[in-house]
Length: 263
Image (cartoon, rainbow, N blue to C red; front, side, top):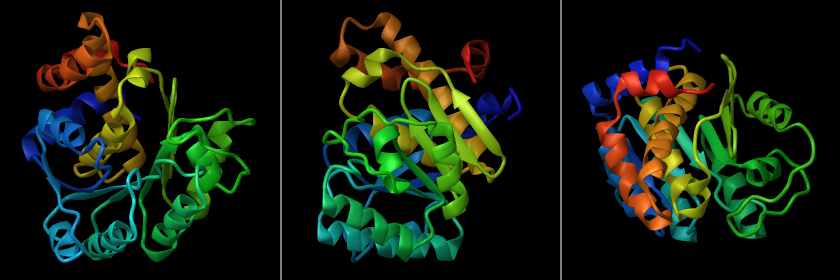
């Protein structure tokens, strides 16, 4: 990935203001909307199956998150994903909690087999579970996964013909154009509820303006996590950090990103 791409795509998001349709986690829905808006894009949260397909039809990207799934929500996700596939816009699936329960695993399989998912995003144990490994997830928190995570991500990306993102202390992004390791971020992110869901929204936002989805995902994470580092420097704890994060995204400059990016 060109070293200028994070800053370039940040500018592109702000110029194009893409609509990013979400069917996402009810716990973090407001935070996801806030972060997309702070980047300069236009978030919409439409969960009803009666309109999910229509909303995807006017969006530039679709973000799905199974954090608070129900049968009705999965049905709406499938309708939206098929509509997005028909339009040719990227679909991001955050496999939140995969490996925790049988129902979450089955729901992920239903979405992955019933539609085209362009970007699969999760923590180490979530992605390992989707890749077929015998691992468990601690609710929605990652557990230790043995083996080479980058190889696991690359194998899943090849099998599903998609981009795979593993978030963690270092983020791994595997796609057709290569593998990228993003080393930005701050430990405070793990202390605040919703930062992982917000990352999926950021990935969707950048995927809306860049056809190389691995580059889009990596660049979006770089920008998001540089802003998180800036927020952490001013925050006394997770509550203040989370409130500052959107502000730091809003004022984030391409110069600041280029100066502080680590990938």
